[in-house]
Amino acid sequence: MEGIVKGERHPLAHEKGGFRLQDPDNLIPEASKEMMKKIGGKLLKLKVFDLMKISAPAKIAAPITYLECFLNDYTYFPRYMAEVVKVQDPIERIKYVTTSILAGLHVGACVLQAMSPLNPVLGETCQRYAPDGTKYFAEQITHHPPVSAGVMEGPEGKWRFEVIQEFKANLNGHNSVKAHKEGAIVITLFDGTQYIVEEGWIQIDGIVYGEMVINVCDKITVQDLTNNIEAEVVFDPDNKEGAMSKLGSKLKFWGSKKTKRPADHFDIIISEDGGDKKSKVCTGKGSYLEHVEFEGEKYWEIGDEWGEWIKPDEKHLLKSDSSLRADLNFIKEKDYENAQKAKEDSENSQRADKDLRDQGRKT
Image (cartoon, rainbow, N blue to C red; front, side, top):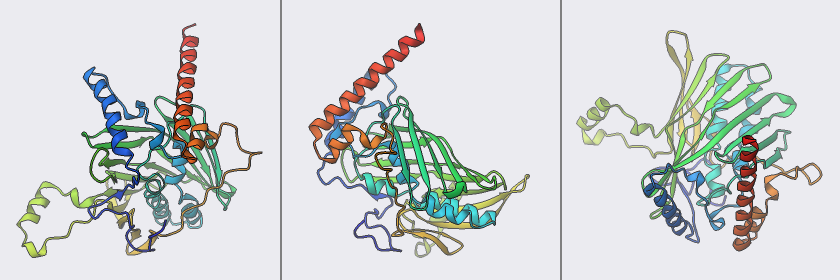
C-alpha cells in the first residue's frame, strides 16, 4: 500500500487506536441504515437477530469471499512458520507462531477497507499456493451459520494449519458492530509439536455516522500443548488496569502520569506451566499497525512484505472455487446491478436446496 514507511505507524492508523476504514464513495452509511431497518423489524418482533443473517447489498461488498479472507488474516504464515521449523528452542518457536498471527491482523482491513466480504455459499471452495510451496485449501461447510474449514500445509509437510471457524457479527449499540471467529486454530509441526490458537474479537465503530474504525479487542492466546508453554497477547493493555491501580494512577503527580498507548497496542507474556503455577519466561509488546517485538528485538514491522498467494491454473482449479462466482466477477467490473441479481439468484438457489434437504430429512 502506498504511504507505508517501514518501521513507522501505518498511515491509516487512528491516533486513539485502530485502523481507519476507507469509504471514498460514502456507500456504507446509507446501506447500514437500510440494514438497521431490517434489524429493527426483527427486534420489534422479539426475534433473535444475527448480522450474518441480514443480506447486505452487493454494492457494499468487496470482490472477495470469507474463504479468501482467511488468507488475508494468515498471509504471513508461510514466512514465519519457515522460521519455526528451523529452530528447536520452544520459546523461540512460540515467538514466531505468535508473530505469524499478529503480523496479519491489519491485512484484512487493508484489503476490505469499509466493504464487506461476499455472503458465503455452501460448498464453495478455495485453492491457493505460495511461492515457497505452501498449499491452502478451504471449503464453506455450512451457510447458516457460516462455518468455514481450512487447511494450510507448509513445504515438505513440515507444518500444518487446520481450522474450522464460524464467523459471528452482532450490533454493539446503534453505531458499532462486534464480530469474532469462533473456533480454534490447530498448528502441528513435523516433530509432533502442537499449538492451539484462540483469537479475540473485533469492533467496528462508525457504521452509520462518524469515522469508521476497526479495532482488535480482548486477547489472543497461543498454547504449545507439547511443552506446556503459553503466549498471551492482551490488546489495549493500558485500559485493563485494576481498580486499585487506576486509583493509584490518579493520586500520582500529574507530571509523572504515563501516556496511554493507542488501543491497537498489545502486551505479550510467554509463560511456562509448571503444574502448580505458571512462570513468566519472556515478554513482548507492539502494535498490529507498527511492529512486534520480544525483549527489545523486532520480529515484524509494518512495511514488511506480505505473503503472495497464487491461484492454480484453470486445469487444476475446482469448478467450485469462490473466484468463479458470478456476483464476485460482476463486482470486480463495478456492474452492481448484475452483481445484485447474481447474488439474489445464488441466495434463492441456496434456500431451495435447504428446503429439499429439510424435506429429505422428514421422509
